[in-house]
Image (cartoon, rainbow, N blue to C red; front, top):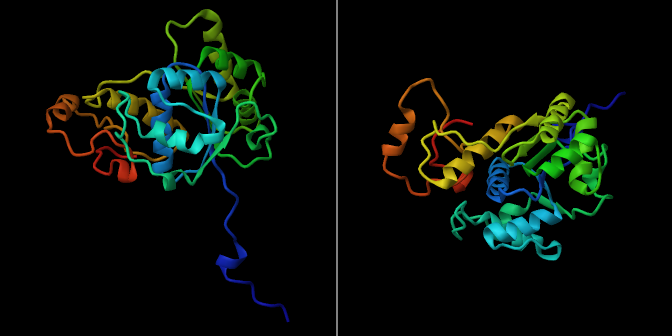
Length: 259
């Protein structure tokens, strides 16, 4: 006699961890990366983090926060607690909130995201420098960030490239077109003002929200356009809410706008 199948909870075990790979290059704009990371964590997403060597210098210059391989968890927490204006303690990201984050050294070309068999949802490069754009467009693998992006493209997974540079030269524009033709989403770090920004964090969160939109990750980072004129002015005239500017979950449940 054929035995009865086990209950669904037993026959369908939880699948493997499938993170979003977040690559941070050396372009100016580390607050964009921090906002995207907070948004992913607030949405309950797992994250594999790759911070390039030049990005560590930019992070230190823009925020004063270090990023060291041996102390990456404490350094990441310090970074994510900063506001876009560099104010410490703007956000409350506890050590437990980082349980879903895994860090890979930029020089580790044997890391998980370097292989197409590694189960990842896709990759977000934020901010993306022109050097990283060129490397991704040409299929180079000089570091793990470029290798992971190449893997993401060849496996036909979502790749969002948040380029942060101005003006853009002809070669950079051609590289961006090549990335678009390869299937990537080219998403310049260009904040809009219809959401009623009152603070630098609002402008940063708008860009981060568009990155998460492109990845299909729910968030409440900015007020969405609803087809009514005057919404930005009305948003600015409202009295500030406690915790305004914070992201998702307990980092901003009072934020308005859908995800």
